Structure formats: C-alpha cells, structure tokens
Length: 98
Image (cartoon, rainbow, N blue to C red; front, side, top):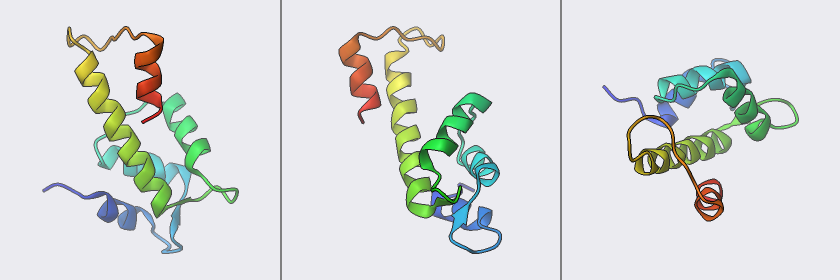
C-alpha cells in the first residue's frame, strides 16, 4: 500500500501542532521513498525549517516535489545507470532551478 505525502506528514506530526522537526522530517522522507545521506538531510532541514526549527506541511510538500523532480532528472541523465552523471553548466542550472 502506497503512502501519500499528506498521510506521511500527518503521521509524523505526533503532537498535532502543524509542524514536524528535523528528525521527523528524516523519517517522513524515508517513508516517502527517499534514501538520503546525513549531509543532504541536514541541508534539507536548514532549507525548509522555519526560525522555530519546524517544517510545515507546505514546506514538506515543496521538498517532496523538488526531490521527486531531481531524482527523475538524475535517472534520465544517468545514461549508463551507474549513479554518475556529467552535466554542463546549462544542464546543472536547469536541474537546480526546477
């Protein structure tokens, strides 16, 4: 059974305050199918957390959509299916500006 992002978010928002913390965000992204290293997780937390260190639903959804797009682009660019891509500046900018 596939979990949808809004269901994952609601499950992670244990105290029902409308935000999740960085640890809950890590778990939520893993449940959504994103296996990310600690460095990427830390960057995501810094990018999407508010000044109170909580991540609201809109931030979570923006992160999930961005990750989905980046993963799709990477798979398209990984012609040898070896986990390595080589990008020109224009290609890289297209990826990060999505």
